[in-house]
Length: 182
Image (cartoon, rainbow, N blue to C red; front, top):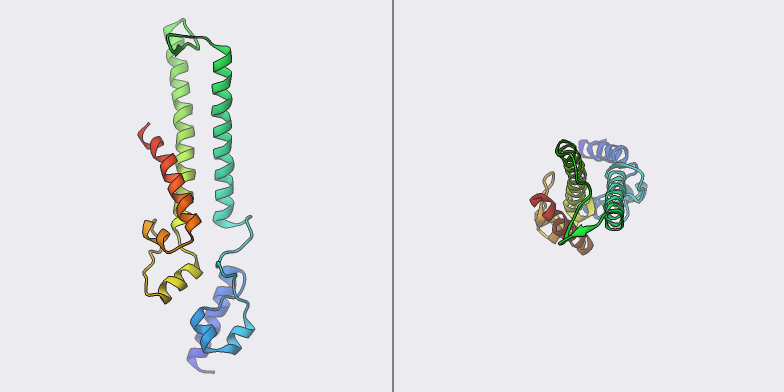
């Protein structure tokens, strides 16, 4: 067995371990039909469809947390609208002892900051995952002579990936940007 064949065999075993199944690059498929027939290619997207593992699980959890924060905000807004009165466009939840008002004010601001931090973290992680290219996107870009940034959040990668990734990334950017300024 030659060194090149041993290296291909090791690479195939390593990719089977890493991705849970074998992966054959476009070049290897064109060069050797026997190697391609022995391995099972990843789907065209290069992504696993199992949503219960890795970064997909974290994004699902982030979406659930974000929805819970939204529900909490809507519930609080509706509750305060019907429970408390407003005078001259300003609502009053409590009037009374200044020390007690200061404590409640601090507690509410800490809660708001904590929820904002959770939203920023969830949005940032999702945006990083969306800008990270899949193996198939890297292969396609490299076959066309285009560079891809690996390991860093890159807006340039969005131009070479699926359009829906860019739309979701832009939506997250526009909705998260105001949180940075609060």
